View 1 (cartoon, rainbow, N blue to C red):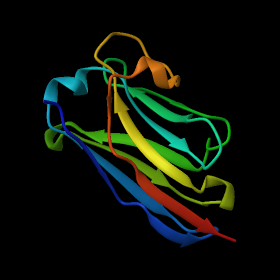
View 2 (view 1 turned 90 degrees about the vertical axis):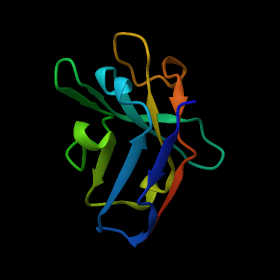
View 3 (view 1 turned 180 degrees about the vertical axis):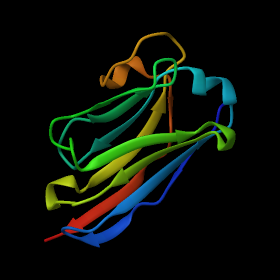
Length: 124
């Protein structure tokens, strides 16, 4: 049974920062693409950022490019999302996900394992 545990969400004012963490119970998932998604009330789940360990490449949605940074610590089986210059429109439940197949995507259906989500609320 794969466990995916997120933490780091909270309430901040616009312009502030948060760092989300996501720990995976299975280290082999770190050889595959990992991603962060978010979902605001009444909206579809949106891909925020993806990291491909095999190439070291990172990908970002246009809405967060230049403000968010995805990274990982393989020794800790942990994926991070550093979020700076937060805006009210970043308010959402944030989820991390891992894929068991090859390739990468910011499409939610590509991912096999999901965390329970951590809430981020940005007040203006």
